Image (cartoon, rainbow, N blue to C red; front, side, top):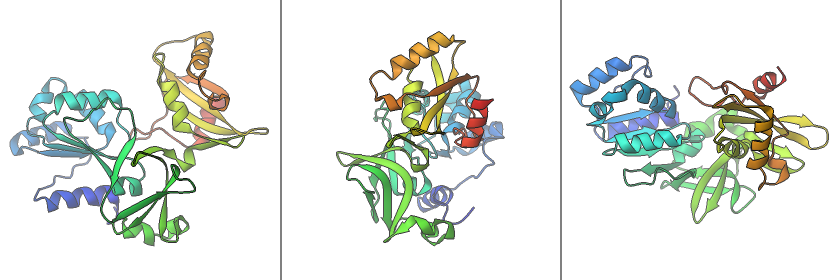
Length: 298
């Protein structure tokens, strides 16, 4: 990996600076060996992505308490944590400090949200934390909501020197691509610039529409993407996985109910029930519009 890679290098560096030893494994492919190793060496911390949490949940089962006995911290990055995972961690790793950060690498490097055993794990917000010393931020084009811009000594120099990022620098500020909102001095991550849908001049985050759909008791996961529209410019299309077999009438009524209190342009202009939402190997939603449109058209 590049030595300025913020996930990998920062994790290793903080371990070594704190006097720790690090065991770098090939993911969790050989989890039984990791489990046996943890019993003989008393592993005190884990660093992983949220999808690994789900794998550990399914593999440990009744051995969770045995595995978590010596764990003092869990460092989790890359994406958001589902509610069931938060509650499972709170219940089974209640002696550990949980440090959770996610977003684009620049964003997660510069903001961190510590989650201890006394924190409220039922909070649904995407608060990504307070800026570290030596890092400055501002919201582009708007005082309270817009793209997050960063600069300062804590922004990895590799990003600034990378030729592929040269167009992201303006007067020393680095454009992260993260859409954030400021509320009472806290920074909330609300989406990505490349996940915005421009509907007749109204910009809506795909994630916002997905959150509304996933709040339904009928639906499991959703992924929203734009397609071109001759009148609106773009319109939102949503793929939905359901927890049970549903009739078209039930789906239509539920969509109407979910979006009745939102502006009309939020409501998907088309949706399709599928068995499973397409995910990457790391458990993230596939955002390639060509793949999504192919599934919808097919």
